[in-house]
Length: 401
Image 1 (cartoon, helix red, strand yellow):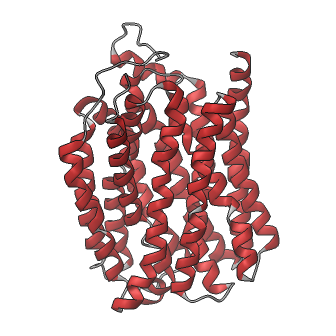
Image 2 (cartoon, one colour; image 1 turned 90 degrees about the vertical axis):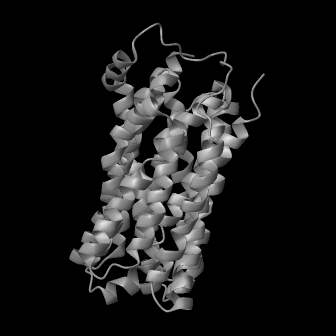
């Protein structure tokens, strides 16, 4: 019998990831205001977003290994508390370098949720439901992003300063740390039919097995492009709406948050198709990354200047981006559960590499060309080309049927 407690686990992981996303995505709607107050260039504004993901990137490899060893409960609790504190401290920063330090440190803290959380969910759900369960976990990205983008500029406007946005949006992750400490359990009592078995190997030998698997590196590099397109787009769409569509900062933040909600539909649709229709996950990962790349390129060609056109053309970017977030469930087809934290950490390390590059590349292009169109095209090209690396995996999957 499958334990009903898995839904408690999924809910806690959802809330943990959502609140850390609130902390990380509080910044994009504040770019116009903070750029003036802190005298930032476009490249520096993009670097402050990338700075968060640099810290996030640095922790991905060790945190997957550590969570496999010491357990998820301790990791979650410490991560959530530190994420909240560092978000609050960001509000006290008075220069580019100070904000960058806090953003980097917050990335280190918030980066401890995804890989351990994904491995935890994969341990609690049977193989046939893993893409769906991971997709619901990933809805937290759109949920947390929606709250941050919709409220950040409004909080700043209401209280009279951008610092308030960081002070207020840092609180939820500290609150969620409490139930995580008392309610999280590491694994269920039962085992599942269809599980990848470890064959009696030592855990250490499987870490080498993960690193030597070509499929692992192909999907990792593919998600670099996906991460660049997703985070690069979410970082700069509020500024685009302010400068090209001529919206107020508060209105631009609200619209951006609604656009991010497209991911709420993309993620479960991708999971359902993978688990219930195709019974394969690699085509969904390809479709999501390639689709988001094409959407960015199309946006760069049209460059809409009115609100409704911008909304219609931007929605496919977060929608397709969310489709490929079932990636961790693909790893459960290849590796035993005891090393999924490490494998997911490696995957997320590569994904976050794209998240680091996307905002900075877009900002740098904006400084050099003063063209949003060139920025969107660069993101689209990176995502579309990287998605092609999924083709060998899909061909191998078709032979294994």
